[in-house]
Length: 334
Ligand code: TRP
Image 1 (cartoon, rainbow, N blue to C red):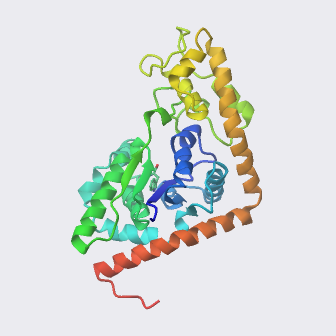
Image 2 (image 1 turned 60 degrees about the horizontal axis):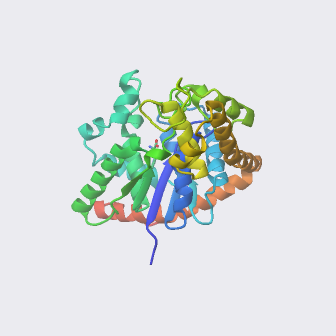
Image 3 (image 1 turned 60 degrees about the vertical axis):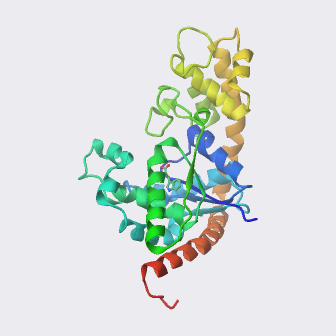
């Protein structure tokens, strides 16, 4: 029996992934490699929907890929690749754009949020069509499952609508993808502002980066916001800071929240923070060190990515060929 396909991607928009990217997403990708035909990409085409410095983009693309590998994405099991290395993403996106309503795209809440401050004059058309490019990423690989965060749910709905629309107009072409929305416990919050999701645009002191030095990570966890009642108990409503620390511990150690509450009964916040720091560092340090090692040999890293792109291109070209044919483009004769 052939395995179902999975596709996911992350933007190379920072010099490091953070703990939320790792515990919320990457861990699941690693787990899915065995049961799925997996495609994981660094979405550099998406990254340029906001201005990027070229040297930084180049560096961040490699750093992101190195972290995928260091965290356990196995280039022999999965196709690990860079989006711009597979031309079909931009090509299919164009076709899908012609099938997306202007108003339909305008209803995407992420676009509305992102343009709320600057207004639509500073936002590019690329930012507007971002979700259509994401649909192309997914549909090219006939992905059955797409692991994403809650904030991508609407984009996934659009993808399903576009696939259904294309199929009913031109005949069965695309698999209809299903989202794998991550569990609530996999959600990691800002250490300084524990009701907001951990994010690179949040408080830098509340952000644990995979590539940070251990001393920096230790300091950030030790300064995490808690509360004044000194009781170690999971309650997101009234104790968001303490709950976040327990959630981080649980996501890495695999111990249930209840067993952690028992374990910390009668102990203080200092103990909780020390132990969380220990658990986090023991997991993050080897990943960071391995990623740095991979980055010392750029030629080898680029070779791995080229190999991933080759695998990805095979299926992407096949899907795009089918699409071009169904919509009535004549063969190119290549
Ligand atoms: N938009 C996604 C995010 O910001 C990234 C992304 C791009 C993606 N293409 C994708 C995620 C395809 C899943 C599948 O998180």
